[in-house]
Length: 97
Image (cartoon, rainbow, N blue to C red):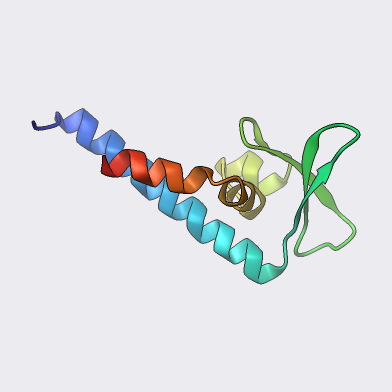
């Protein structure tokens, strides 16, 4: 069963997006980014690798509060959160199926 051209493009974009997020997650780990959970507000918070006094709110559904995410719709913080929640692997598996 073949896929239409639009479906093939969408599958390739999803696969590339997952690969990019995995790469960003690896960069975040190497840079020392940590994902913490603020139990009072039930929110994830990510440390900033360039400014140790700064933190960013990061959410699997809504993204990250950092400038990089606002500009590119992806960042190391967001990639690391998705990786730790096991969501990147799921995206890759869905595209392979």
